Length: 369
Image (cartoon, rainbow, N blue to C red; front, side, top):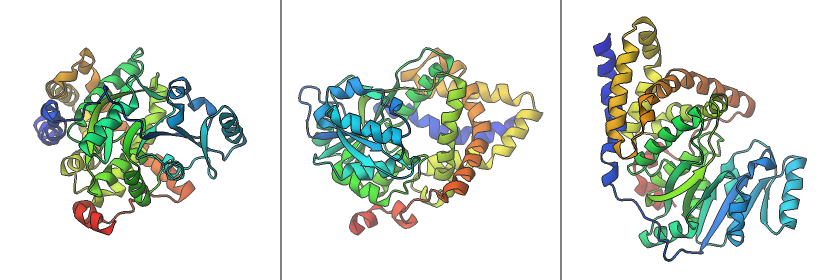
């Protein structure tokens, strides 16, 4: 059993995780701190509860560049929008369903933007460097859309430490796949954002990486900037489970519901469609029936993780495989159930609003736009 499991796991794992071996040699953009640009708008989607605006002190430094897009579907958020306006903040109101996607809020916010560039920033995220330094790098490179380096604000609890390793590895992977954008912080030309939002599914879960994928599919110049954005992460495993339930719901619709759209990303598709979903039952059975499977896979994954991610190595990589394996065995099913619940309550399935052919041949999308 062991040889078969390892033989099935290793090629896909090496193809995806092994890409990080060459990541340090991939050119990424560096912030131009000596001449930051001021031609940007920081767009912050806010919904649900005013408490989610946790970076107000940071945003105050760039108040003239900030636009708060507030979902006023509830009385609490409507009053919050009024208060922020009285305090001198620029506010755009997004009325409607309190659960509607930040992508929809981006569309509303973009209607009020007059700058060349837009930075999408979560309400719990901030940077040390001037955001205009990243915009200056984009402008110098003629980039259309960019991911940045998302870093956990705290690494105090065990849950935070494991997420820290996860984030470090993911950010290294973005040297190869800059289209893997995060809602915590991503940047683009305003006209690029508008083209992306015209084709966005507006589905809630996974809406951030969908923006990066659409940018890639539309033939845009997508880059990664070595610009750190510090964001809050769940402190406990219970909070982490709730967050990842949504993440894996998004992963299911990205991988399965849009399987035909992912042919442009063959390695990513092979790993997630084949290894995570199609072989899930086999992995569970092998892990439960053969006591040698788990330690063998753990050893293989520890070595692979450490070697492929040597620039961001950490002692926590020794236990990271258990964390990763637990997610891979449990969360796909949890994410699927959550997707079914969303489908039942909203009738939204999350299909991309772009043809399969255009995802393969970006030139078609450039001509169509």
